[in-house]
Amino acid sequence: MNLHAMLQKRAVAGKPLRIGLIGAGKFGAMYLAQVPNTPGVHLVGIADLSPAGARANLERIGWKPGAYDAPSFDAALAQGRTFVTEDWEALVAHPDVEIIVEATGNPSAAVAHALGAFRHGKHVVMVTVEADAMCGPLLAQRAAQAGVVYSLAYGDQPAIICDLVDWARAAGFTVVAAGRGHKWLPHFSQSTPDTVWNHWGLTAEQARIGGLNPKMFNSFLDGSKPAIESTAVCNATGLTPAPWGLAFPPASIDDLPFVMRPREEGGHLHHKGQVEVVSSLEADGRVVPYDIRMGVWVVFEGDTEYVRRCFTEYGVRTDPSGRYATMYKRWHLIGLEVGISVASVGLRREPTGCATGFRADVVAAAKRDLKPGEILDGEGGYTVYGKLFPAEASLALGGLPLGLAHGVRLLNPVAAGQPVRWADVAYDAGDAAVRFRREMEQTFAPAAQIAA
Image (cartoon, rainbow, N blue to C red; front, side):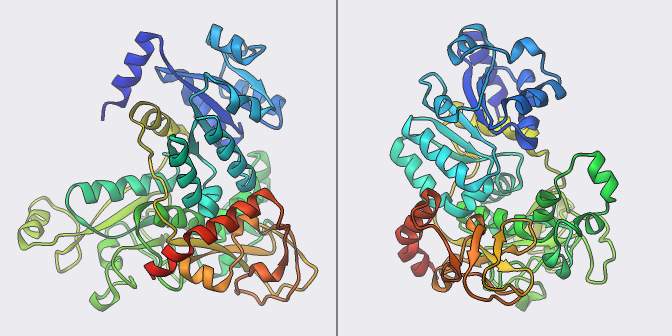
């Protein structure tokens, strides 16, 4: 609870945390907007495939031109400015950069960036949660071997869920379930970039004016992003999915203790210690009042009669038995909160969420009947969506990770709603991201199978 004071001390001492950012798009820009207001931090460099686009974002969010026109990394360090480049390798190799914030949104590229940072002794804050869902356990292992910290990004929902789970456990509670909210109806899993705005509640013109990316927004709507984020939460906290993945039961915040309890006690959970996502829509499309669509929650258990009496005395919302209670954050601020991870990693050497095992996986599933010869277009597209699996089930199936279901040709027909397997696609076995993912499967397969 003293990160700000620690940052102020670094600022007074003239020893700021030295940061490099890879990817200055939407999420990166939100972090950049907070950097000038954060003491004890120096953003040394930004690496982006479009330096001109990065500079345009810096101008748009209010940075003064003189702050980001340093001619080199060394000049940026000497003058307290920022150098913008397209050379991510030079950024991670610079000896004075301590922490890399990876915010490209490209899972294969993010894996390469993280591994490059580890080789050069840099800590990594992984904004690209798709990369963590695909390879997080092995990335965490490689970071530990390199003596650096690998962390999920605070502000994004997985890290905030991890924070709530840790709070509950550190306070002595048993965590029954945790997760996020979502606007969900079953047919949303077939949504495409052509249909996303009607489901989302915007017109195509409003989306165009706002510069919104339909494929990115569709990845949230069709359930892919909730599956990705739930995978990261499971692998970091030890929570596990139900055998069928996510059920998206509707629930208001007040109803979370009712809904997120075991089925034999009147709830929806397959087991205690489960990850789940609750919908802000009833099955008939009615809006759930006092929803948690944009937030996160944890349901925990009062193990004794005394603790349950305390819940009552302090007005805690519980289920009828008084046993199950909830804590939540109704909103999250995404990139505006990434500085919490930067400070935690840089000052305490503590991640804000990090994989500790391979417990869950997100597998590509067909949005419609797919035919041999079709090219899969990945997260948020027209062909596949992400489905949450227990890790052992994904391994037994030979499921194709959603993060690698882009630009690959289908060899076998796959019926709508069915998972896509490695054997169903013509993948490049020599691709670096493919090799790293396959290594993770081999490395963690025994633990995943034992955990089942």
